[in-house]
Length: 399
Length: 214
Image 1 (cartoon, rainbow over the protein chains, first blue to last red):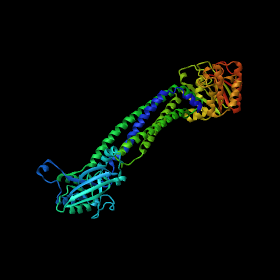
Image 2 (image 1 turned 180 degrees about the vertical axis):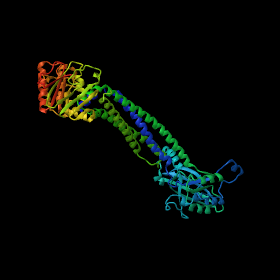
Image 3 (image 1 turned 120 degrees about the vertical axis):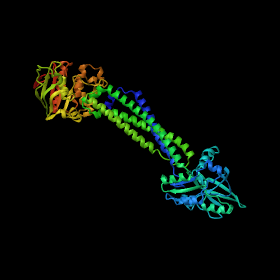
Image 4 (image 1 turned 60 degrees about the horizontal axis):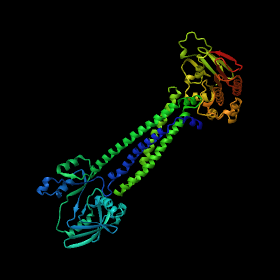
């Protein structure tokens, strides 16, 4: 094999192979990076909310010019709730209850005050909240109240506040670091509670407390106030149910379409990544072409040597092997280098993503590994077959 | 492999020739293992063509070339590779050596494939043929006569049932051609092989059992 290689490496053009190497490297890297990035970022948009099941929808009444001018309330009356409850598509209906008294709060992390504000609480029936009941309870007289915060709060804090104040970033595992002091005032009482943050929800844009606390505190701090709920939470047997959309249309009910937004974002993300990957693929295909052209050229320049080798008893496989090994060697080199570069780039962007979304699934490089191996195999098999074909043509004296 | 038969073989290029006088073309002839043949012809009569049909390099003929009972047209690539490695050795008229390699490397590239001879035996042949000092010389820098001797050694480093030598001594003096003939015959005898020599006049002085005029 040594002598055969010594013979067949004649006329190898280093610049051509370097050209192929880098062209293929960039193509491969773009394809792998696009795919890996897509897989890494996708959970940001599709992650399920741990506090609310996917088949729950939140509805409110449409706020239009008419209702604002006429002063008509956008709250649901009990008859309307009853009517909704009787619809076949709604398996469960719950109302949002709001606080009727004044609440203010102070949120701090590690002793540093982060937020001082007037707040309001809302609650929904406990059966809609997907948290172990041992955490999600309030017993009368206790000074500790479980709270679920909107996820946007924490994103705001992590990205805007924590970095500039050198405070630790907060993820779901570290909610205990948040001190939330709640000050309540009404009906001649003035009390301080400690908010115990259970977690964050991206689908509930409100500060959620247990129904038991809400019922008791409304009774205690504002016994004479009552307002109808403005938002309802429903469990729908099938969110795509036509009857449901017809009903909401007729009654002027609006569905909070947070899911729709993430679908749109996912769609655009997918489109963008696809475009990037297509560009990478085109580069890869062109580089494949470069390699094939230079191998063809090499075979052409060495065709008399190849023919002589065949005539003294070497098989087409024997003489094809050095060139096949050469391309395999190049392809493996490209793959390994692409993976290495990808590893560092991913390290870099995952830092950003984790800052923005501390709870995101860290994922792994499996998509890039699998796609890389698949591309490598595809390209290599094509290379091997093309070289074999070329040698066979020499055997048949068609070159 | 015991016999090479040519049944009514005619190269396409001779199809238009009306007054073809030949012991080979359009005849049924048989070369048998263990015998020594001389194929003589003026140039342009198809000596090398004959060799390339036997070695499977060209197939532009009518009629049949038959090895033992098998028509070579039925052979696939592996059959031919096997024939060239183990059954028929060929010394090409145009030698087909590799100018980039040294004389020794040219022989070894074949011996690496067959593993048939030791380096010692090869060097001994080089010495016998008077080119022992050229082992490491590039083929491209050697004279044609010297190259012919290297090509002969390369033809001998494989097992064979037939050896086909195409004008082996065109550029050799009588002394060297005698040595080359002796080495070849000794090797053929050791293997019990048949020998087919072609010539355009000047030929190795051997005891040919049959002479065919192309």
